[in-house]
Structures are given as C-alpha cells and as structure tokens.
Image (cartoon, rainbow, N blue to C red; front, side):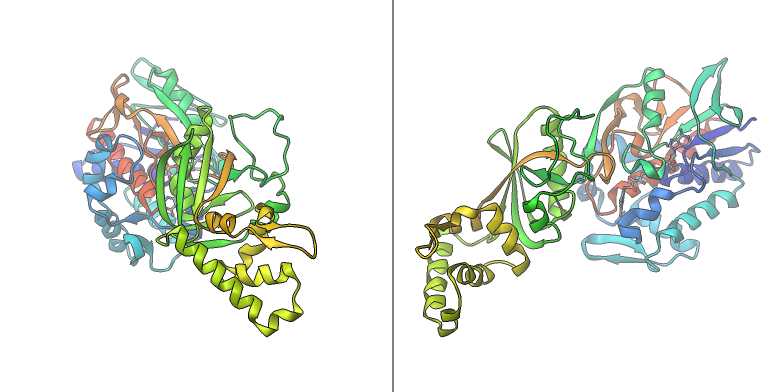
Length: 450
Ligand SMILES: Cc1cc2nc3c(=O)[nH]c(=O)nc-3n(C[C@H](O)[C@H](O)[C@H](O)COP(=O)(O)OP(=O)(O)OC[C@H]3O[C@@H](n4cnc5c(N)ncnc54)[C@H](O)[C@@H]3O)c2cc1C
C-alpha cells in the first residue's frame, strides 16, 4: 500500500496534520495521497475525554503569556503557534460551523460543550481535502529504505515519501497513546528526553494502603487503583477553594500557588495540585524528598488565627447549646467554624494531636491547631502514573527538529507533532493548542516538501 504522506496517529495532532497536508496539496494543485493510520477503532479518543468531555481546546492568551505555560523549550514551538494561533483555531472550528465560547481564564470550548463535535469537525476537514483515514491499524515498526519510509501494520506494509509521527505520549493508554513514537524516534537517532507523568495526583504518605516494597515501574509510581487508607477515605471527595499550596523538595521551597485543590481517590489534585505536580513528580523520579504544605487561611497571619481560635472556643464553651455536647463534639463545632465541614474527619484523623489529654480531661492544642491551619504538611511519597495523568512530560527533544517545519534534522522527510514532542504544558487548553499547531505545521511542511 502506498501513500505520499503517512501520518501515524489519528489524535489531535494527527488529524490536524492530515488536514494541513491535504489542504496544502490542494492549494498547490498537487495530486498526492495523505493517509492517517490509527490503531484504535475510532480517531480522536483522547480528545473525547478532554476537559471532562467538554474539550477545552485552546487558550486565548497572548504568546508572551501562553509560552509561560509551556513547560519545555517554548521557542521551538513558536513558529507552529504563530502559524496556527489560538484565535486561528477558533476561526478554524467556527468557520466549519462549530460555534465556540471563551470562559474564565481565556479557555475556549465548543459552545455545545461536546468534545465529539471537535473530533467530527477535524475529521470532516481532513476528509474534505481528500485525506484517507484507516482505523484499527496499529503500526508496529517503521524504517527508511532507499529514501522511502516503510511502515509495518498487521494488514500489510505501507510505503511513503514523508512520514509524520503523531502518536501522542503515554498518558491514558486506554485511548491508544502508548508511547510508540519514542522508540521509533530513538531508532532514527533522535533524542528522547526522559518522560514522566505530569498534571497528575500526588499521593501523601499514609493516604493509600499499598505495599511500598512492591516493585515499581517508575520510582514513586502508586497506581490509581491502590486502595485508600482510613485517612485517604476521610479526605477523598473534599474540595478546597482558595488555599495556598507550597511545594518543598529536599526542604527547599520550589513552587508556591494559590487556588483550589481536590482530594480524590488518587491523592491531591485539582487545578493547584496539577500546577505543582510536574515539579513534584520530577523530583520524586530523581530521588528527591517532596512535601506539600497547604495554607487553609492564606493572607491571615498565624498569630491572628490563634487569637481567633481561642475566641471561638470561648464562645462555644459559653454557648448553652454546648452543654449537650461532649468535648469531641465541641471540637467539631470549633473546626466547623474554621474549615469546610467535609474536611473535618480527614483533618482530625490526619492530625490527632490537636486533641490532648485523657477522656474527661481533654484539651485542645491551640498552637498546633493554628499552625496546621496555616501550614498543613503532607509528605508526598508518590504519584499517580500514566494510567491517569493528563499529559506526558519529556519526549522527542525539540533540539532534534527544525522549528519552522518540525522535520527531523537527522532524517529528512520525518516529522513529529503533538505530545510525542517534549512539549508539555499546564492545564487550560495549552496542550491541545500545541497539538493542533504542531500538527498543522508538520502537515503543511510535509506537503510543501513533496
Ligand atoms: C483526561 C485528559 C483530559 C485532558 N484535557 C485537556 C484539555 O481540556 N485541554 C487540553 O489542551 N489538553 C487536554 N488534555 C491533553 C491533550 O488531550 C493531549 O495533549 C493531546 O490530545 C495530544 O494530542 P496528540 O495528537 O499528540 O496525541 P493523542 O491525542 O494521544 O493521539 C495519538 C494517537 O495516536 C494513536 N497511536 C499511537 N500509537 C499508534 C500506533 N502504533 N499505530 C497507530 N496509531 C497509534 C493513538 O491511538 C492516538 O489516537 C487532556 C488529556 C487527558 C488524558
């Protein structure tokens, strides 16, 4: 089987590459075949789960701000993101009848909030210009023989003049992304920087019941399916708004964020959890000791909290309604005035020392309570891995590609786009925009070079 341009992977970047290549060929009046080989029964499976199925497909921040959310060498991606800007992506979708909306934080979604509409629009655009899409077609090997790429699949061999690797990263392998592109890149002599999960849950010590001595595929990986401990069970499901979170590595403060965190069946995640997860996971993988310190009362000095706690306690003790309550119940009333109700069981289980003394003679350690409200420390002993992380950090080094074309410097005719590149970003629509922009540029470049 022959195709002038072969694209491996029918995800965000691969579909956009197919559109870019086939449209460019049509505009140049060249007759050539573009084919996407996708191993899953349907294309775009990962897009379908983005933004909780709503698909936050881009972010409208200017390049200066946008580039700050790219966690690798942003300059290497600049030509791609100038070729297809975030506004360009909105125009692309709306020009094909898919209305878009922009929400808080400059995040754009299809107005229908259906990720499937984005997949259908992309697929339709690629097919409109004649691209062919073959599903259930897993590429097992690629090689270059006499200037032609040979692509092995279960249904036979494909040959092509240009090859675009759009196989994605390693996250959510159930969507088809299993990191196949990395081994091919290495076989062509292109460097692949160490990969690790990013935008993932961090697991505090004592949060899960698992065997820490069991062999791990990656240092610190604690599978999402490991069962929760009593503390984990008490905390899972709690969402904290407007808290401060500071990441410490080896005792040094490395990142401080303000916003929301979620305790889940994985560990600590949510927007701010994700924001610090990259540095946290990287440090753990490299053998570092990490801790997260949560400030439940940002902006309020500890001395003021201490005074407030004591005042509240006096009020509770004087309140006639307290006569019916035992000490622990009164403590719960106090905590209820200081934190969300659903946090209290997890907070008290994690910090039993705030209640001191024997039954009938209990007292509260006010200093400890005030300091915990200001700096609740979680030693982080692991993280949820590729099975449920949002994005893969690391990948094909952007030093190995020409930024203006995304062609491998070593192997003319070979292109990379999307998450297979060392190009992970924060949450907020940046990852998909990078996939779309690099996909379009790789496709156009391959077509122009035919
Ligand atoms: C839960 C979740 C939510 C997310 N939400 C957002 C969001 O709201 N906004 C955002 O910007 N980003 C989000 N992302 C990240 C974003 O989805 C990815 O960065 C993006 O899809 C990467 O696109 P890609 O084309 O590089 O890879 P993918 O979309 O992963 O596509 C790769 C394709 O290649 C195929 N493939 C792999 N190997 C082979 C092979 N050997 N042969 C044939 N085909 C192969 C796969 O089946 C797959 O279809 C989210 C990710 C996850 C996991």
